[in-house]
Image 1 (cartoon, one colour):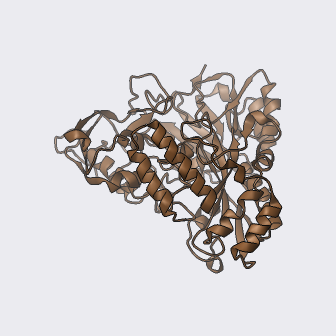
Image 2: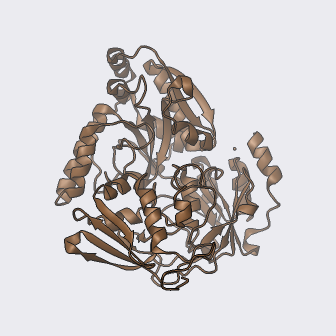
Image 3: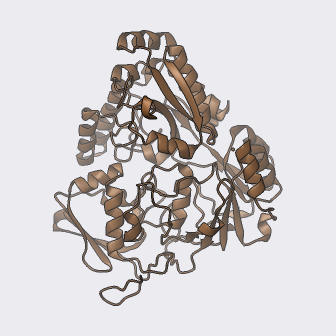
Length: 525
């Protein structure tokens, strides 16, 4: 039913074979008004609040928009907003939507939609939970204006509403916000520069987006996720190619424009092609991690988790993932994004590659030889490599390892289960955090009890609260150092090193971002 406002303003074998059969013949990319793209894996999760993989984030960034957008300095700027007012000594924030915003179903974007979207996000996201824990009320006071009433000032409100990583506070119609994060949201209606074309979706082969002609870009120059978002292509088509050799050949022949995640061994080959550009994909620098299920034995025991730390050699994991080129990875990496304000090497020496030390600690921990289920993702090469190295290391330490391989979509469903192993549960999985998801205590999933694994470490939770209220950078850095030392003590997760994935695209493209995968502002040069 159409709505009107109160003011009357409308405002990777078998999978690869199936994909090849389903895929239409590619034409030379530069001869069409279409951007042809190869993602790292198929789009198995559409819902941006359902703990999706990176491809879910790449998908959602085109379909949805946010009230604020993070610029290249990681400073939030108004995006869907015309602006905001801060009233009552910082306890009341009044946010005004830009005029003329429309959803892809041509309904106006109303403040009530933003309120419903933010409430749903705030029940799921770590930073959102913090914001809503001090929110007395969030309401739409008109079609264009929403208002936060806070119990105390929270200067990070724009930062929370601009975060470009899991979970991003995308705005969607109120009727869809009620389903977000439940696994039941499949209808994609946003207000972003591209709309999802569900009728052309071919599972395992193709995802299609079309330019939303009623999208109104901001007038400012583009800067990361802020400023003008211009859709220069009539269509963006994802071609799922599990075989890396096929993707590389298609790129070199000009059949595709852009390959999201280039295996390190193919990077030098593509870089020698004068028609191509090869660059690092994440300017902050992501991290591979090992995450434990803290609800069930044996990893409900922090001593069992921490027993693994001495055996960790991050260079071993990074070499398996990214090869011997040290420009593409770093070891001796702690809890927070390397080289960023909260990064510290406090206690880093705990990870020494000493398997014998881990065996001794495991023997003293009370571990009784229980089977542990390690989840491996076959269709994400980096996570699959980490799982293989990790499972072997856990066996050498003395764990009874059951390595189970599956696709990412299945792993997503599985790791969301709190059931015991006998009822389909799990013990360990490996995951990739992009740089922003570990930038500071506000955004870091691995140190919280709300993300899959659910370790409750009260001291860390208390330190996170103190971090928000810290008076200056030095105080925040000291708290981050204390958090890292607690991670070494109780091991809610283990960082396995940072690496910098490569992306490759045709030299005829301009505007390809260095901060992940987005399609707005990408154009023919």
